[in-house]
Length: 56
Image 1 (cartoon, rainbow, N blue to C red):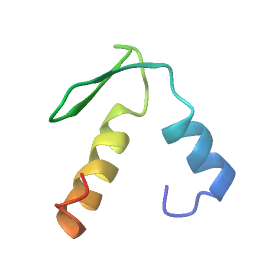
Image 2 (image 1 turned 180 degrees about the vertical axis):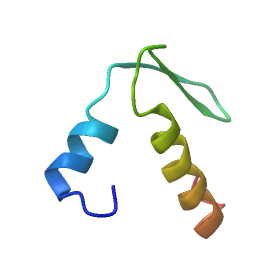
Image 3 (image 1 turned 90 degrees about the horizontal axis):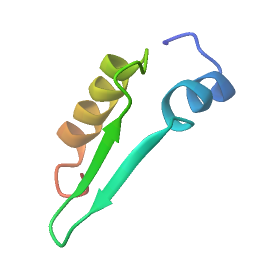
């Protein structure tokens, strides 16, 4: 993904079919078990969380 263009990243990481559950304290994203980029999505989340823990 380090050489990916913006539209590629958007299509692979942000345009996904998922169930989003919102509660008072958290947002839960339930992805389909067949989502091929789940590990990359998790790595992006943890990288963002490490740099801004109060926003994730």
